[in-house]
Structure formats: C-alpha cells, structure tokens
Image (cartoon, rainbow, N blue to C red; front, top):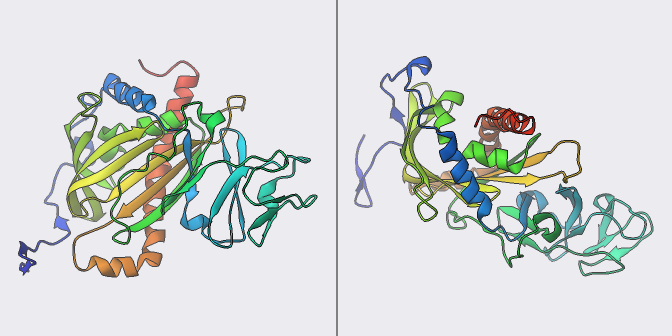
Length: 336
C-alpha cells in the first residue's frame, strides 16, 4: 500500500527481513572491534569537560512539589526537592546540625524542614548547609558536584541535542552495577557486540565508519532493530561521547530519524568504598515525522513502561559486560 503524503513516497515503518545468517553463522566482528580503537575513543571521551555535572534521575520522577528525593553521587549524599512554585533545589543530604538524613525530612510550603530538630532550609546556604547547582533539562535532572568532579565548573551540563520539546516520547530507565563509569562508557563505545550479544534486539549490524580523530569522533552503524520474528526496522545511527560519563546514540537515517538514546553513568560510591557502584541512567527520546506519531505521544503513559522494559532487557546483558570489564581491570587481568 504505497501512496504519497506531503509529496513524499509513503513507506511502511517495518520491513520483513528475508532470511539472513543465523546467529552462529553471522560475520564475526572481533577483528573490527579492536581494543586499541575502543580505548582511544574512551580516552577522548574521558578528556572532555563535564563541568562537574552528574545525572541524578528523571525529571518526571522528581516532578512533585512537597517531596524530598535522595541520591548519592561519588559517596556524597544529596537531597533534592521542589518548591511550591516548582523550582528545583539540591544540596548536602546530611543535616549540618547533627547529621540527620535530609532525604527522610519533610517539605513544608516549599521549605525543607529537618525531621530531627526542625532546621529549615529554603535552598540558600544556611547554618553550614550548602546547596548544589541543579539543572532540569525537561528529561533528566543534573547536579553539579565540584568536589566529586574535580574539574573546572561549568554553568550548565553538556545536554545532548534531542528532538524538539513536545515532538518526542521519552522514557528513563535506571539500573545500578558494580563497576565504574568508564566501564559503562566502554560498553557503549563497542557497537560491534550488538548483534552477537543482543540478537533479540539487533540484526544485520555493520559499523560503516569508525572514529578518525577528535573532530570526527563518531561510530556510524547500520543496524536493524528486531520488532517481532522477521519484522525489523533498519536505521543508520551514530554513537558519540560528548563528555566523560555520557554516550549518545542518535538515529541519523531511517525510521525515527533524530531519536536519541542517552546513556549516562553516575558514580555512587567514593574512592574509599569497598568496590565501586555506578548508576546507569538511560534516557530514550523517540520521535517520528509520520502523521500517526501524534497518537504515540498521546499514548506516552502506556508506551513509557514498554520503553523502560526494552532498556532493562538490554542492560541485563550490558551491565554484565561492564561489571566483567571492571572485575578484570581491578585484578590486572584485562586483555591488553
């Protein structure tokens, strides 16, 4: 059923894959997935400035005024809350008076009131309590932790370019693993593992361009997303790392062009902890130029759990990859 809509030839969003090699007979990718190439990409990402900004969760998750939200970044407790007007505040999660966990306190008329002795905080420095700069980009919440990051502070985080506000459907998934942020980033800078490690989601994957230098630093991939059986969605996507703890996959051609998957890695433990723990916060922002996508935006509350479920399935495997990488690195047995 082909036709013309808006002057362009209509094509179905799904394609029926004709045969193709079975999992065990697909083209091996281990020669292309050169450890030195992945490490060079990781080193370039690690050298880019973050301005000490860390992703702490989904904006939607922290939408309600009058509630406290507790997080830990690099071993430092953080408390967040919104005022009655919706302004987001963040700061030390330990009460400077006698150490109460402020994440368990109450917000009264926009003011955080410590539940141990009533110390009231309106988001400004007071009685030894210090706020942290916070940024809500509409999908994710970032907190600037200068002592944890140790870099030159920046006014705003490096937020990836996304579909225009109101044109996409976003979902955020979070999982915690025993590894460091670099292990999460290294996983994402190895696109060659996709159709081998995730055959339930990816087929016919080919890396068509590798990073050349700091100016041309994208992995470009042709891949088909498996929907059901032989039904797939073929796309071209690029992977980039705009800062040390973020990798962005952006669809550049095919169905859902300009959709993004952002993978953010936030360290939870400090250097003195008994082994690292890292939160993987993955934001998927899907969009389409098809007229019917307006229905998807309307159905976003139903779609978000499905999108999070898809992320969870992938990260069940990818976290094992990242944790294995850390285990080998920490014992000096990592190849190369």
